[in-house]
Length: 175
Image 1 (cartoon, helix red, strand yellow):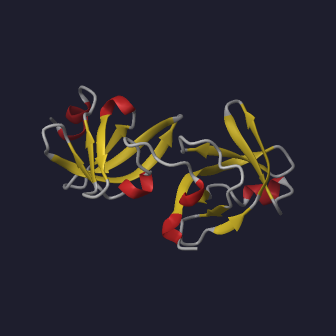
Image 2: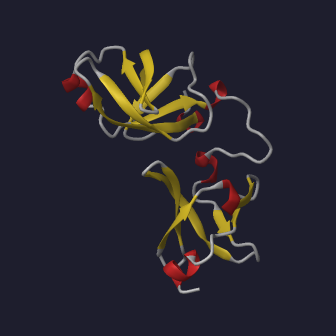
């Protein structure tokens, strides 16, 4: 399988209980891909196939059990691993949507067309999606990835247009 076809869904955060279940910080807006083959690893290039044998919700967070992971110790070894799925198993995107993977390293533009920097990565802090944008001077801007602040995507030109909340630019780059 070409590794570029894998889409990052979330991170396995910690074991739950004694029978090998793992908590998942789920980054995807789409529903869990029930019949899709999944991949687990520290990154896309070294991810290995994995089969979910049980799934449930606990306090609003997905819990997964994988084939071959039968106890807490084995589950602990997966802590921090990323969960991927082949993009062909995901529902089609709406016109105003994009996969995060497709926008990594894209130019980030402000409403007036000025380049702010590049979209480096996605982080999920306290349940909030945060885009890490790196300016040309190397400064990191933590941008709240809420629809009201995202103006659009241009996949072909690799551009993300944003409208930061009031005060954000002053905090990071002085205006």
